[in-house]
Amino acid sequence: MDADTSEISLKTIQLLQERTPSQNPGMDEPVRRTSRRIRERKQEKKQMLSPKCLTFRPKVKNTRKRVKRKKNDIEEEENVQETQADNNNEFLPGYREGLSEYELERLENIRQNQAFLNSLKLQQISEALRPKPKPTLRGLKREKTETEMLPVRKSLRLQQKGPQTDVTLEMTPSTAIEPEKIAKKAPGPIPLDPINLEEYVRVPEDLLNLWNEVPLKQDTETLDLKSYQEVLQKLTIDEGCVVKVVKGRVCSAAFHPSASSLLMAAGDKFGHLGLWKPDAIWGDDGVLCFEPHSRAITSMAFSSHPCNLITVSYDGSARSMDLEKAVFDEVYRSTSGLKSFDFLSNDCSTLLLGEWNGEVAVVDRRTSGKYESLHTMAEKPIRCVHVHPVQQHYFVVAESSFVNIYDLRHLKRRNSLAVCELKGHRRSVSSAFFSPHTGNRVLTTCMDNNIRVFNTSQMDCSTPVIKSITHNMHTGRWLSKLSAVWDPKQQDCFVIGSVNRPRQIQVYHESGRLLHTFGNMDHLTTVCSISAFHPSRNTLLGGNSSGRLHIFTDSFN
Image (cartoon, rainbow, N blue to C red; front, top):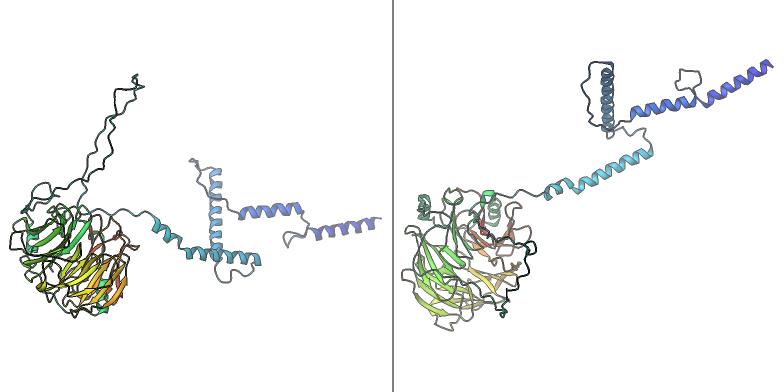
């Protein structure tokens, strides 16, 4: 019996050893399953890291608790370093050896998700959507208007008063509000006093020297298109190239012909005239503002030596700005508004003026406000007149939806016959200009969303359209009309503003090819309806509806 019992006990011991193998290979004695599980849980807890948090620990003396706490902190730092090493090794070659299929699939999903998030470029998009700081406003300062203080309303009930029944309402028929009549400027010369300065200040000496500078003779040679594109790509704009020059919407702008320094002029819808020299210290950031007219200045141009600035306005007056005399001389006055003008002679002494009522006047500046001849065109109103640069007895007129070329030598008082007609316009034409140097092309801007280039090398009835370019002309009532103008240095290229977004100014070749697009997300944020190139320097200006001028240039000096 004793032998049998000993055999049974040996068998049970063997069974227990098979069911619960020893934790350590060197140990032969059996280990309970519960103790094994407890040991595994302790190892898992050591591997798991608790989230870091800031806890307040008061200063303790060098006791056993403090020593124990230091040991725990050291162990936590070692565990963090081990986990970071594991994360870094996750993407090393050979690390995936020994991983299960599920873990490999998980790592691949993580990689694909990260690549997808990187392709979305969320960081760049979030930076682009952040509100950018407003640029510093340069130029004319906004006038401070005092708000009218109204009496405080008080409740009759709180004042223990009854309703006031002695007030009788007078019933009057509703009448239409008449528009406020704008007073015209008095005829005759107007003193040249800047309105943006508190006291009268004499014209700065450097402005007067620049004004009287003799311009360089224009070079008639033009660049090839590749070189011209390279020149356009070098023109840039920055914060100092955007300045408020006039108070209202820019209706016309021009460059002074000086090649040594930049000087620009702009006229707005209220009759204000602004001069801006970028590197000047006088005025408001180099801006002087005058008020020679009472309504919109529709056109302006600098005459040759002696230099004067000729401006025409809807108030019916044409004036000449003379800095040496410090006055705005009156050149001509009409009962109708003046829309456009051009010089009929090389010395700029004779002007061709287009009036809003459909008449064309020939005016000599040396006479006192009288016209030499007056001619009524077939259609009205006249939106633009321009003289041929070589054969100055020819001039083109944009009359409503018609564009005609006339010969000044054969004009009659009424019903004058055109030399040739430029056909194809379906709506009103805003401008028509001969090409510089030769006059072999006429550039028209029409409200049917087309820019047309005509061949006028031969003045006869056949004037074919070389190219018609589609361009959006719908600016609305609050913006000036778009108008394509030639580059005076490149007779086969022209510039025009655009209503597309992002805001831009475009340069085209006469063949319809888009050569360059000027744009800047930070400094060109509005539609520049008025645009013009400098006659001798690589500089472009654009005027918007808030009275600001933007210039793209390669240098200020």
